[in-house]
Image (cartoon, rainbow, N blue to C red; front, top):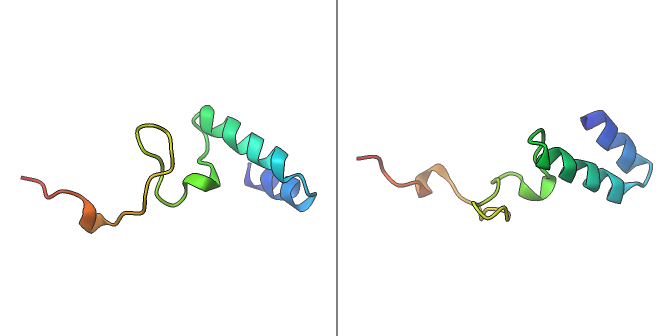
Length: 59
């Protein structure tokens, strides 16, 4: 998949590469670049930056 996305972007097909990435995300096979490196929140929007220190302590 990475090779295909790279080829699309190299060919100037950025919109098509983004559409393919979104479809892969919806199928559960890839994470769109806009969600890296922090993933997404429960509502599907990009999560704000965090570190391991931000997580609550376990009891």
